[in-house]
Amino acid sequence: MLRRSLFVLIGLTIVGCASVQNTPAQDAVWAAYNQCRAEGRVPANVQLMRVDPDGRAYYQTYTSSFGGADFERCLTEKMNRPSPR
Image (cartoon, rainbow, N blue to C red):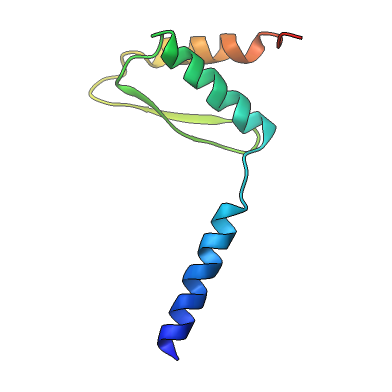
């Protein structure tokens, strides 16, 4: 019985996680972050940790706060740029 319950719990967890999708605001922040990284405007010590459904981004800097302001500036710039049509 315990084995079956564990199997069901694991299965439901996998199905639940697979159905979760990002909001458009989250996708926009991740896309901006990836663009900034690709352009070399985000130092390696800055890591985007999570993005809330409303687009609020949380990042962490390792070893020092160096690059945090550059990261925020680039992200803001990318998020405020009108999308090409």
